[in-house]
Structure formats: structure tokens, C-alpha cells
Image 1: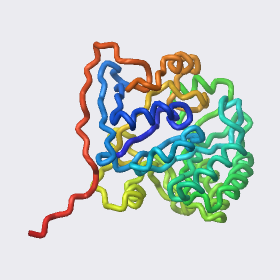
Image 2: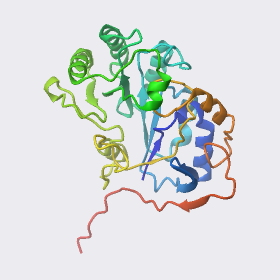
Image 3: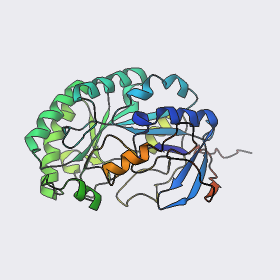
Image 4: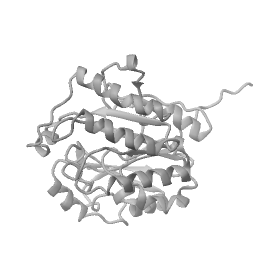
Length: 310
């Protein structure tokens, strides 16, 4: 099984102690985001977990504990975007973020630290030139420290529209997407960084950018050293190429407070939820109340089973 940690929040930045406690205890409890009374118990035994995929904008709190992950295979999806504190309220300065990226890559290897430039948006003082200048700067710094950059464009969910009210930000049309990718692909290619898209319908192969995957079965197979039997994740959007995984995060718990993020509905709710966090709890958020239905997930490794010759 593959563990996603997490599309819903930044576990390395804010919940590293809790995550390491879960590995030590050998299991984690995850509430169903659509029905909080339904709780899954997920076995975290190393022989069952093929890979852990970390989604983060600041892995610094986890980096000093990587030696505690020696029984597991993992890689990082590290988001580095160009926006200021008006849109990303609680992130470290960009120079510090890039330094962290480089240090992490130097420790675990460039293949296992993937740059996510996501979401791409226009408006609120951000134009194509703004993206061009930052991307050139960041790509030059990250040369040799990552092999791939995954991009996607903003989707204006209702919660995003509400949080971004007053910034004059709209979804990009196909012409704007194509022009933006042409601008970004040039420095990516110049600095040896493959560029792919994430969950986008638009075909950008004519400018050298193909559809990609964040949770990538081929990459995980290389990291594991064995082939996987794994399917596309049916719980994700049709345009998402990611393979099956179990996400162990919770919505409305990321204190970066990026206003464009689909995972937070209201910054005030994040503050309230974080106050409920107990690093010793099997749940990321709060405790069991006693009226939940806890079901153990039946999981196994995706390692491809070799056919017997005799």
C-alpha cells in the first residue's frame, strides 16, 4: 500500500511528531472526511507499506528525524510557489524554502524530491512576468536538486472563491495556460528539470509538457526496487493520473493558510482544529468520542507477485 501524507494538510510541517508516533505505534486512525463517524484503522507495518508520499511546503521539522524512517521507502512532493504573504500567510521566506529544498535533496537524492509549482494563478498583482522571473530564479537554484517539476492551474472551488474575494483571480483559459507553460518550460528545460502537468485536461505536449502523476507508480517501483501491481486511484478526479493510496490527513488543519488552497475552508476553523491536536492521539485531529464505527482497512503490499514456474 502507498500512504499519502497528505493531500489534505502539511504533515511534515505541522504534525511530524504525531506522524512519527504513529509509525512507532504501527497504526493510524483516519476519519472519513464525508462522514466523520466512520473511522479507518490503517496498519503502518513497513512490510505492508510500499511507499510514503509526503506533500509539503516546509519539511524542515521532519528532516531532523529522517533517520527514523529507515524501515520505509518515501519521497517528497515539495511545493515552491512565487506568491507573497498576502496569499500564503504563514510560509517561511522563499530563500529559506529553497535552502530547505536543496538540503533535503542533498540528503535523500534529487529523484526523491519533486518540485510542485502549484497552483498557477493570475491576478492580485501576479502576472506572467512575475511567474517568469520567479521560476527562472528558483529553477536555477534547484538545478541538480530535482528531476521533475509538476505544474497545475488554479481551480476556483467555492471555498477558494470565498477566501480569494477581492484578489480578482479567475481560472485561466486554454490560451493563457498554453502561453504560461511556454514561458515556464524554457527555464525548466535549460536547467535540466522535466516539466509535467497534474490533473489537467489540456494537452500541452506540443510545447514538450506531458501529463504527469504526483503519486507515481513507476517512480515508486524504482524507489522500492520491485515492480508494483497498482491501479489508477478511482477516488481522484478523472484527469488525475495518481495511483491508489490511502490519505492519512484531515482537512482544515494546515496552518500555512494559503488562500488558494482547497484543503482549508476557513482560516478560523484551522485555528480551532489545531487546538484539538494531540500528538499522542491515533487521530490527527482530536480523540475518539466512543460513538464512531472503527473499521480496520485490509491492506497489502502492491509488490507484483511472481508466477510460480512449477
